[in-house]
Amino acid sequence: MFKTALRYGCVFFLPVIILCAASSTDARHRRHYGGHQYFGMVNNQKPVAPADATRSRYGSTEINKALRKDLGGTPKGPLQVVVSIGGQRVTLYDNGVRVAQGPVATGMRGYATPTGVFSVIQKDRYHRSNLYSNAPMPYMQRITWSGVALHEGPLPGHPASHGCIRLSHDFASRLWLITKLGVRVIVARNDVIPIDFAHPRLFVPKPKPSEPQVAGSEAETSARFVAATTSPTATWPEMVVPMKRTGHVAVFVSRKEKKIFVRQGFAPLFDTPVTIDDPDLPLGTHVFTAMEVTNNGTSMRWNVMTMPGEEPRIGEPSGRKKTSKHAIPTPKPFEAKATTTPQQALDRIHIPQEAIDRIGELLIPGSSLVVSDQGLGPETGTGTDFIVVTP
Image (cartoon, rainbow, N blue to C red):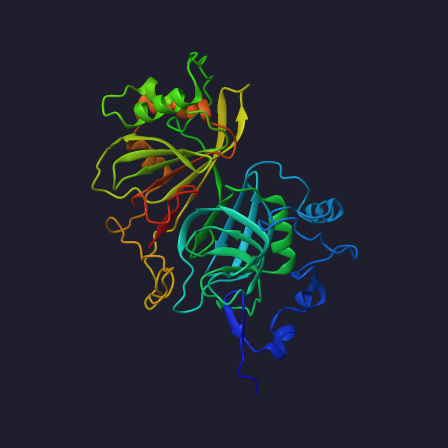
């Protein structure tokens, strides 16, 4: 009948059946306002048009309150999002407790959604795809710069996207309002559940020492920073003095590179070698998250999620279609995978005390430690947390 096709999110379908292909909820809530498509109305109120091209504002206060209430109000602690490809569902954890769950549609055959450790690196309530004919991707939360994101879209009950993770209108809109940049997103073949975890080698809060006064102009201070961080003979204090960032600290220990990498606010702080016992044996991939400060500020409660030690399914490529210029390279495992417990992994890792102290000074709830056999992959870059794409 019709030869023209519209790409909605990450899939093709005919315009005459747009309202049928999308859910009935999508059809009821779709509106046009000021040249933009909007999804979702609460109490018959129309969302406010974005004030600028970034479109990062939340809209009306009334809508925000109504949507947040449905997910239990303001988060009680760090949020964690887990996507199960096998179960085609997404689960939201708040402070380590499951608070919401809903269906998803992940990548179809030939466009498999990559599995691994991600975080939200961009949000856009009214996003349109720059890969698929400007198709609408409402309530978009990007997890890779190469094009993988969570967003509202049709849910046929099976994998159907071009790699993105589609959510229902209700789940996408509510999740978008309570998350912030940096929220951890785990994508696995099966459900991964966070569990409370304690270990003597997990970081603890440490009081910050008084910062020495550095005289001179801004230009001179900048020059000192460049000199301190690039000089092969720079001492540890010289390197850490210029660092004055805020936000969650993210730590990555790579068995492949035998290093610890530290970022804050999506920007690198420092890296240094670590010692790993039995370095030829796998560590697995484990994500430790700082949940809350305890014992009058002297301790931190942590939880952990361990990625399943599974191999890719036959015929299911990891990442996007090879013909795409935005393809995610299929990660090459450092060595054969093996199941290692979080306890066993941390027992084998020895981090320099200077690095431990510096991380402790930056540690706040929501900070994380990722341990993996993988190295720094191509997805970890400017404006990202540590992204570990698993086989």
